[in-house]
Length: 144
Image (cartoon, rainbow, N blue to C red):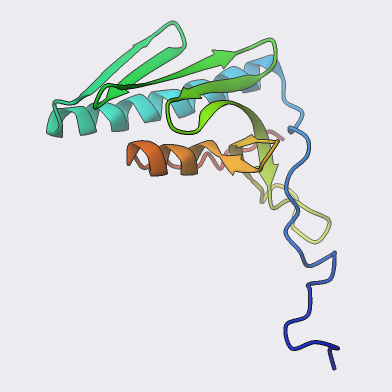
């Protein structure tokens, strides 16, 4: 019987915020980053067709998006294996590739990879959804 009506979860049951990126090769970084950015460009171009206030430009790994005169910049940073975002709303963030849900009690190879800002656990996918209103799938092809 718990001591309180809403007891704190045991440490093993609580969701831990990732504190380190998943180790990946430079080749894997480019695969994940390119796939993510290419899908994002596709979704943004679809949104651009419906809304003339959206401008999308993607060249040499740098994606510039202007929405109602607010400018976002996403770019690959291969030396750090990160995607950097400059947002007029949430500011600058550096996202690392993190494989989620692959702990001791999970089956190996079942984790999902996502770009995560390690300082606060923010997901690039969620931030894009909230700030730009664009849905981007999560890459479930994790490095083995």
